[in-house]
Length: 159
Image 1 (cartoon, rainbow, N blue to C red):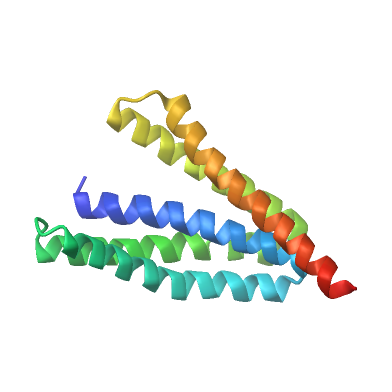
Image 2 (tube, rainbow, N blue to C red; image 1 turned 135 degrees about the vertical axis):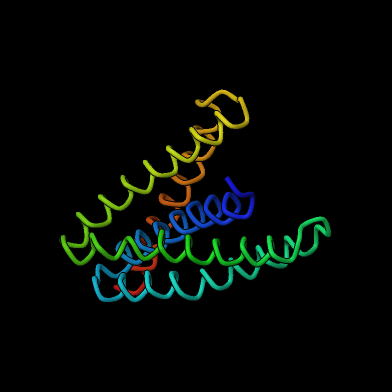
């Protein structure tokens, strides 16, 4: 597998899922509005995908040992993967009530992070439980923090 694809795919999947789930959970807890959650997902899928792909581009350029072609490939793969993994969460929001869509999205997101973590653990010949535990724990912390922040904002605005 090409190094530039691995960079873009792993970064895009991880960032796309964690950022979008955090946003979805926070907005659902704070507003309960399907329209606002969809707008948030689209914003993340576009703005954050461009931002992250630019960050990967600059990061790779700073290493000085990667070809210009590989840098642009990593940039493109990051954008495509971040956009796709973020935008995919619109589907459950359109098909289900918002609470169910968010729960389903969290489960799918955790499963995809788990699968990527297994692949990383195998490639690095590290214990899968350690890599999966670390990655899933960070994801769950983001989900919980954004849920409680959304609830807090909702309670502050409802007063």
